[in-house]
Figure: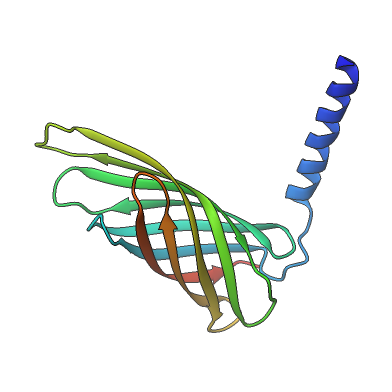
Length: 160
């Protein structure tokens, strides 16, 4: 029984690797994004850096890092999102779901460090200017401890 379970795990890992490294049928399978974001409850302005990869047609994986600019202390956010594009057109709309970790180190405050983790859902769009540049607006809602909307406006570079 254990040997059969080991074979299933190995087969699953091999298929996952093939899916991740296979050439996607999507024209822009790699994208680099730079955006600015603002949340409704946390009044901090953020600079976001993301990469987008399409392991499957119409589905992308988007890890991102945001640096916030508080008056004192440090704040940042790590996200891992999945995006689904239902249409393949010049103007693309997508749905997004993912996980967010927010870190805030407050100077001169008895609270010290604040760490919150939230699930998120939202929607956004990709609007191409030309074959290599585009515009990316996005709105997401962070579920859980933060319970706030995040608005993001960005520039997209289509790598291939």
